[in-house]
Length: 78
View 1 (cartoon, helix red, strand yellow):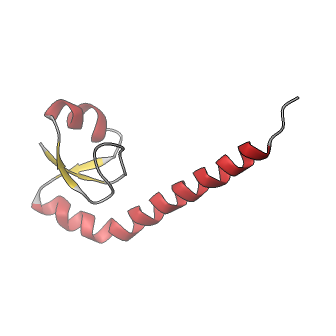
View 2 (cartoon, helix red, strand yellow; view 1 turned 90 degrees about the vertical axis):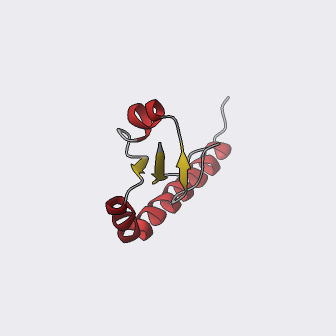
């Protein structure tokens, strides 16, 4: 099954990549968690509209994670 990724997934692809996955993986994990869209004409047009918003959300998540890592490094446990 061909899907368009809406989030970056390790070992699968980055945001916006069109990848082929097994139908069960797409149906049971990617699609319910809104990590991917089925590849068809309607979804390709929809993805083009929301592409920038998705990339902004991904960068926000990445920056938040980096800040959190820095905060955790500064914590001293006695």
